[in-house]
Length: 308
Image (cartoon, rainbow, N blue to C red):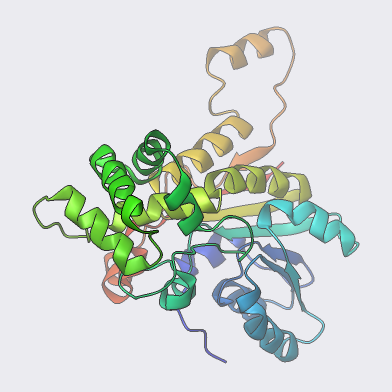
């Protein structure tokens, strides 16, 4: 069975996760199943895969047939991995891998509304429930739109875009991806860049709609809760805000941020309680060969740690 996308940093993910016979692993962001399949192929282990997107079920069912007794799919948000596993009677696991952000499979489906390159409804919901992008874009106040586009997209012309959105929706509701992309491009009036001018705005709206940064923070805490001593956490991200959250979390839980206070505790014969030991001292990025073969890998960053 082949997957419709190439898993990013796959060799490095397997290196730091180190799958072992008889152990249990969680793929918290199942998607097209690339990491899950590689883990199952590398050791006689068990994988519990999690995804909130109902569209991944056909892929999950195929893997369940191919790896009978070793693969289990749990539908839900990866931030709830501890609760989902507890419902299955699993209280501890040996490894967790997370691939943060949108999957290429979701981008390729025009009807999901993630891509400005394809005509589709302004949806952008990974779980296909809750508020969609169109509702937010057509109802949010100008200031909220501008702040969202700037904070999550890093778009310097967010105020111009927000004003253009309000002017456009006064005439009629904004309902399609291509219509929204044109509004954004027309509002910027800038010189052509390497990336499409609508990229940062689409990214920002998607992150807001899915509460991606909040989900990530909750997922890291949940992973720490379910990992057994010696268990490994491997996280791949594609956005600077995501990587900052991961870096700060792992530094804090490994004592790297303790500084002087850590020495004060030792002076009083108290050892600081540490939850993780860093495996990757520096962020891991794809090789030039990988980025040439898979452009999606260009912005990928990997961090890993071992549960104490």
